[in-house]
Image 1 (cartoon, rainbow, N blue to C red):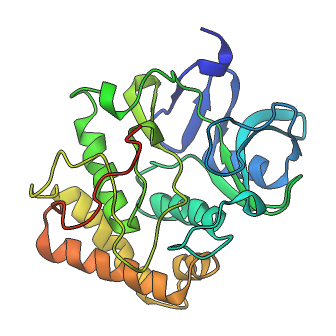
Image 2: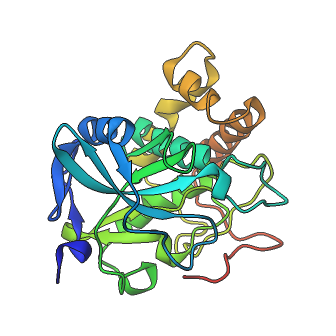
Length: 262
């Protein structure tokens, strides 16, 4: 297997690394994503709904791969405001970090060759692996992902949007269809419907609630630059609902599964 498909890994702390990618902390990776020179010699990724580029970032002699999604390459959607998907990608990373869950690869919002867009750390992975091949070995991680998607109101959690890194670490990518004010949860992960949410996960969610209520709080300020006030209020409503029910949601009326599922 060559470097381009070597799985990513983590040491369980603030380290993100992969063979073929430099070993950097999350902060260092973000610095590279935000400041690095972007080159698009790898071209556009096929079969993407929106313009998506595999790019190389270079900063102070450090080089790494990233996924660049420019706003102006976003396909208009009737149920999401135009040119906001990149912001939602960044907001998903910010919330994942605030929860200390490390689900979303480091993601920045910056200018690039095709304008402002999200730039996300590339996680090398085996493309034959996805949610439907994971089996039971990552169930504890999937419980975290399912709760994260409930809070962020993910409208498109396909099986292929979950990558498996070395050490069987699960990474969540393609988080652009999130944080809608209207209920939009569409996911392939209904394994835990109706089950009690583990207490440590509820404690993590409870820990960020007050930060999102305080307009002077740094977390609120960052999220307010990415989402509307109504979208933040809807996120708080979903958090309160989860904390009250203490259970994973069940599929409701309407569309509950994304299409295609992978």
